[in-house]
Amino acid sequence: MKNNPSLKGLLVAVVVFIAAFGIYFLFLAKKNYFLVDNPTPNTYYYKINNGSEGIISAGQYVHVDLKQGKNSIKVFDQNKKMLYDSAFEVNKIRGLLNIAHQDYYVNRQYYGYNLKKDSLLLNLDKTVIDGKEYFGGAKRFNKLYTEDFYYNVDEDYDKLIKNIQQVESRSKIFRKQDYLNYYKEYYKF
Image (cartoon, rainbow, N blue to C red; front, side, top):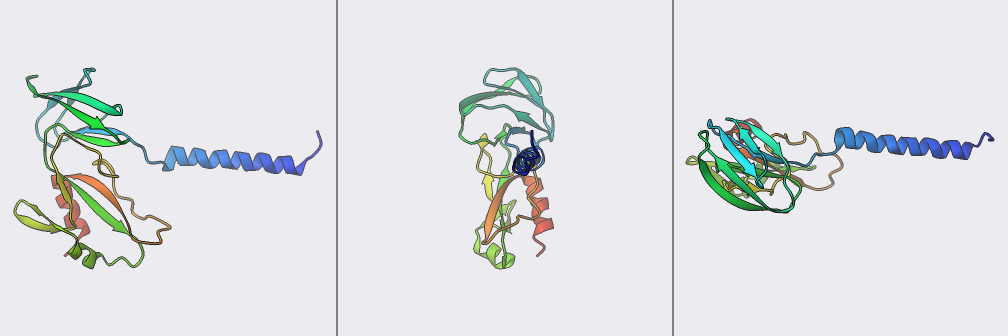
């Protein structure tokens, strides 16, 4: 076979292309998954879709497999006494099961050039938590299942989002105490 520069260039381009996709999927791609979360000091047992029994201890979260469409869950206390049997609908590729029906807050963080954080916060709704008003318009959630967020409780906001030509936002779901800690750290009034 002759020394063909065009063929060598094509092979190098293909290898670089495959390597770029490999790096993206191994290190940069955002993983999509479902969590069962327990921010309480109690231990719970649960069965999803009549599968095997799972256990979740105090303050723990567990990755679970859910299928698109209707799902069911049975939740038991630490003495294995049934607390409830419920159904929920999965439409997206990530979500949170709140088996203890505790308060969570979905907060929207804004990114972009020339972002005036203080005036933006003042224009958004206020959220009342334990009788105190908080700026930013975080939405309270305490139902069994939600998928209306971008970052889950075990993920952090991106520190920097590049190539934004306008103001954009990302939402994250927080446990109540985690949201209060985040608010005090991020919004220094």
